[in-house]
Length: 204
Image 1 (cartoon, rainbow, N blue to C red):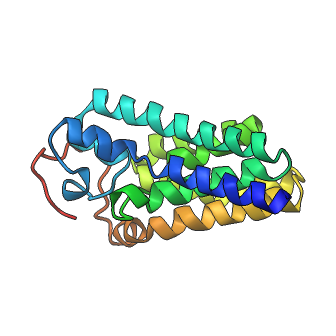
Image 2 (cartoon, one colour; image 1 turned 45 degrees about the horizontal axis):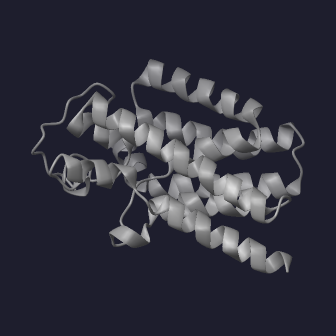
C-alpha cells in the first residue's frame, strides 16, 4: 500500500511542478518566455525579460508548488512521501507535461523543497548562493555552487542515506540543466545579474 501512496505522491508532485509559473506569467505579458533571452522558463530569465513584478509572481508560484508537492507527499506517506513529491515537482518544473516538456532549471523549486526538509541546510545554501552571486554576479554559478554543496552538507550533517541520495539526485538535476551555463562560464560569456536583456531578444 505504501508503494501506491508513493506513486500517487510522485504523480501529484510532477503535476504541481508542471505548472510552470514563468510560462504562465509570460502569457499574461503576451510572450513565450522560452523564445526570449536565455530561453529558460525560470526566475532569472523572467526578471531579465519581464521585470520585477513578473519575477515576484514567478518566485511566489514556484515556492508554492514546491511546498504543495512536499505537503501532499507527506500527507500520503509521511516517511518518504515528501522526498518523492518534492523531487517529482522539480522534475515537473524542468520537463512540464503541460508545456511540451520544455521548462526551467528547477533551482528555486529545489531550494524550496530543501527548506521544507531541513531549513538549516536551506539557510546555508541560500547564504552560499547569495555570497557567490554578490561577488561574481553570476546567478548560474551561485546555483551550481549550491548544488555541489547540498550533498556535501547532507553528509557532514549526517542526515542519513535517504536524504543524502535525495540531495545527490537534486544536485545532479541542477547541474544537468545548467550544462549550457557551464559552457558559457568557461568561455567567459555568461550573462551577469543586472544585465538587461531587450524584451524582443531571442537567443534560445
